[in-house]
Image (cartoon, rainbow, N blue to C red):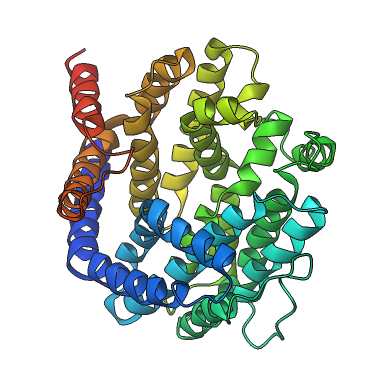
Length: 389
């Protein structure tokens, strides 16, 4: 009876979230993206304008994924949640792209740029020169995104309850983003030392897994969504932070690294997945992280909602990995899929619907994204084969 009740609750949460996403969240995301694209196109500096437009074009899926958290927010606060998470993710994507560009002081530049993420969650704080290590003028584009995020957060009824955990989560993201690209000479000593310090508080994780956990913005979005509950208290906000960091964050970042493994290798960049000794070790470790992430997600208040978000995020990456011939992907994908359990099937269906809409839009505009195409069909076949087995 207990298991059936759990499945019923999850099915109910799934149906409600799917309806909320397509009827109210997705249209709002589209409007936000269209408005911000117009602003990006007005950036006076041609290099910054090109990077901002590139982030809009190539990372649209990140925005839609971030906005999925708003599906679980009550209608009165849903629009504000969409604006906050979309603005935050746009800042992240833009600065991630910008931080990868050559710079004489890459770590200091990365830190200075990414302080914009901290500014975005600190309404009323004065702006700094985010481009202090660059000679660029974005015409107010970045500060506009920051202010959009701030205004939306202020409108959330329980923003005060998430102030401290969302700051801690963002601070970890900023440090990771500052160190992850290395020192410009191919060395990652600063990242390694920092990640090893982070790992001391999480003995269950390898040091690079703890470092990976800090990279994820999912905890930020979970906290923003929680702030839509007028009765949210600080203890619940802290519990959400502790569930997403390190477990869900580590899983998301490692899956992202695995998806980019071939591209990183071709460009000479190291990926987090490269720290594992073998594909077999990678699969074992990532399955264990996935199991713990799901256990902690289900244990939260509103556990079915958090479990669905986790399964949807995982399914997004597994669809891409199903196209890969990498021995890492062949072993990791079924291991992580198994850890998601029965939630894999409905989340794959939602992902398929979202991608179908994206494909129609791209065909209409004459372009295709490398992540679209036959991947979803392969994902659905993989889930069906697992269920049949």
